[in-house]
Amino acid sequence: MQQLPREPMEWRRSYGRPPKMIHLEANFVQFKEELIPKEGNRALLTFPFLHLFWTDCCDTEVYKATAKDEITKWQNILKAYSSSDWLIVVVESDAKKKNKTNILPRTSIVDKIRNDFCNKQSDRCVVLTDPLKDSSRTQESWNAFFTKLRTLLLMSFTKNLGKFEDDMRTMREKRTEAGWSFCEYFMVQEELAFVFEMLQQFEDALVQYDELDALFTQYVVNYGAGDGANWLTSFCQPVRSWNGLVLRKPIDMEKRELIQKNKATLLDLRSYLFSRQCTLLVFLQRPWEVAQRALELLHNCVQELKLLEVSVPGGALDCWVFLSCLEVLQRIEGCCDQVQLESNYCHTVGLWSYATEKLQSLGYLCGLISKRGPNSEELNRTVDVLAGLGAEHPETANSPQSPYKTLNEALSSVEAFEKHYLELSLTAFDMYKTIGQNRSAQLLGKDLADFYMHKGEPQKASLYLQEALKTYQTEGWSLLTAHTRKQLAECQKQLQQTQKYPSVHSAVCQGHCSQTRSHYQLITTPSSLSSSTLSQLPSPLLQTPTKVICQLPEAAIGGRVEIAGCWPRYLILQWP
Image (cartoon, rainbow, N blue to C red; front, side, top):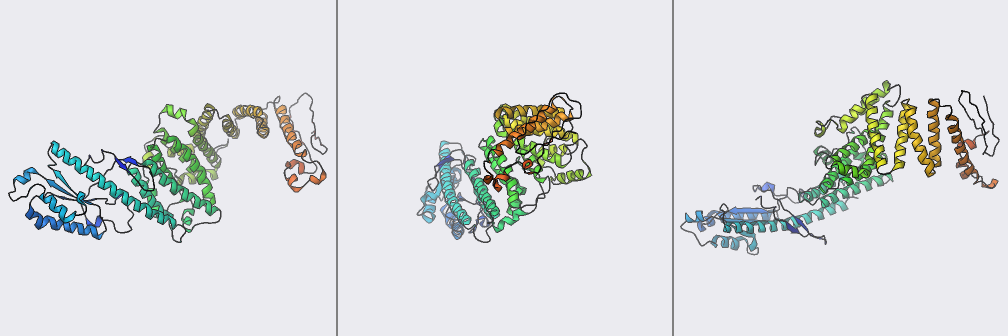
């Protein structure tokens, strides 16, 4: 029977879908009436597609006395369950025939069976000759048997699969009716995905999960617009666990069971759905699509939790996103070599950057980005955040750099956090530089500058700010230039760089004045001073009286200060 899947079969499907070559595999089990599915049973994976009756009877008297009655009883059971997919296999052996004196010619038993049970379906009876011998005749007999078996299996599979798809469509069309359950429908369509995966039709299996993804997403969007389905309330329960995606096993049975029992949270459903999509994409050798989809998933989940108004503890979502980013990256690293990884930074750098952003948020939340370190309240917050992770997954327990261990270590101390945060940040920064996305690199560099400023290290912060300032000046980003100059001025103030600080501070003021002038160029007559125009003005212009205060360091500075007023009011220069 191991030869059954060796030869490919052309599979022609309905609705004009193109034919495909598939390999059929079958699991043979002993016939029991209780294994025959009843009407309405949707277990396609365990469905008995073909029933076989094996007999080695070669004596007419034995056939009349026992074999015929056994076949009749077997067929009556199949008819009771409306099953018309069957095959009778007659095993003939020369050794057994030699011991019989009252035997008919070789085809007599086969002819009787065909006359008694296969009047209109003569192909439902085949002969297997001397199956244990190693001869050309035996081989021809086996080949004919396997050909017949594959043909009947494929016919039955196509017929029952079509009926299953029709029932599934009918179920989906009832989704507007009261009492319709998405989780129940999910299990039905996933059954179809499992069948396609078993046939190694991974693209078709992926389509099933993509359809479920799109259906659920549409319902969430409708819920946010005020058109909510009753079954969505089960996904609005508060988040109590945030242990991230699990991508290292083909099927997460724990989360699948929660979906089956209608007890899954939004994160449970999204995690399970993506894990299945990831498995199929890896089979299709499309790991970079995994990274792209993962980034979309993580951003969408944040919005879906808001749309469904799900209660999320502080830091929980940051943990979930951080763990998920690292899990996806490690899953991709496990199926690609270093050369492939380096040539596809453009697909993975987004995940590195997002993980850095979420770790930074956790650092601020837990008081790990400061010179003083966390206080008692922040330490309690750290304990609550780590408690929601639960126990580590068995699949990563032996991995020294698992996402679970990385997060636990990063939140354990200020020093450990700085180590992991800088490692992530610099990795993403270098990747952006490598692929030429300098603007993204500069934004990440400004985050690093903020980190160093909070740590009381303005010298390191100024390096990233100066690099960002050059880029923004070259490309003409006036607002970003002004903001970066302001941050750079603060660095120079802390570093007591008395020569550079006044020039940078005056440049900040000049940039702000230039932006203010552009607002007043829009006001040509007093009648144009509408509320909408006023709302566009910078807040300093709406104050009365308007003041510009130029603060200089206390140290003695030689030189001349010139202030050119651009406001349509008098400037009041205050000199201490």
